[in-house]
Amino acid sequence: MPLDRIIAVFVILVVAFLDYIGLVNPLAQKPAEEKKVIEYNLKTEAMVNIIGDIGKYGMNETVKIKCEIKNTGKTKFTFPISVNIAGPDLKITLPIKKSYLDPEKSEILTFEYKVPENAKEGFYTADVIAWESVQGDNSQGKLSSSQKPFELIDMPPQIQFLNLGLSAAVGEKLNIKVRVKDDRGARSVKISYQLPGMSSSLQVAMRRTLGTEKDGVWEFVTDPPNQTGKFLFLVEAMDSKSQIVKTEEYKIAIVGKK
Image (tube, rainbow, N blue to C red; front, side, top):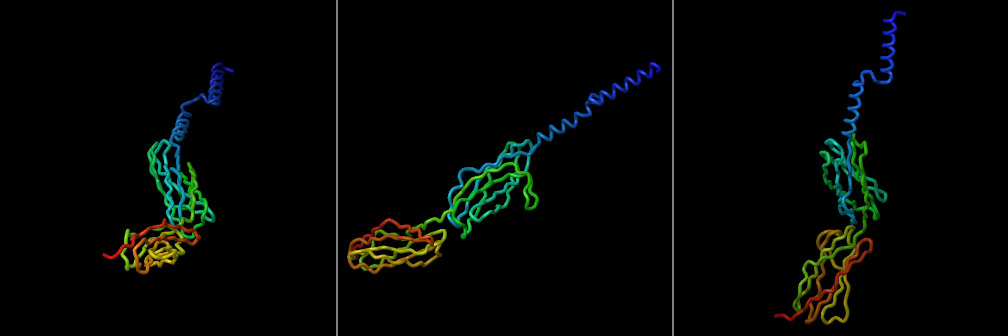
């Protein structure tokens, strides 16, 4: 075989070997590697945390869930944030909110859950989740989540005096008026009282004159006291769960007519 053909075959074999081990035109591999690095640097990342304790709530109140969403990635992104509520015989998802954030920036969002009147008492869980995207009713690409419990309880009634005076005159009726609030509704409101000259106290039902069982005004009008002294009384309210709340005992001075 001529020498020039031997050299040509040798060169072809060398080139083939170098191509096989990846040393021929190595720059052709570089763009792909750079692309992978760029894609990694632009990966979507986020961190979400519920701020503080959620706490205890009564029926028909509004639970407030405050959370912080932070963009921990390298590019601007709009993060869909959802909140799942789970508890006794309940599992719902609150309307999604979106947070548009620059890298390393954060935002505080507040979600609200209106407790229905027929909710069951007990412990519930709020699960806040940051997603990559939302397609219709389906959330995709879970990035971060944060869970905390809260409690729903049947609150006892609240009593507020509306027209509490310091004194009254002999021969004048006393009108005791209170506002009673309860998350499920007050079953009854009673007053225990003792006028000057009475040997013991009496307990009678007060009458609701305004509002509803959940938030109403209740009144009681005494007989006219016929002598001076002290009018002693207290008010108690009972809700549908038989929780009873009593006020402290109050005193109104009954004075002679001027």
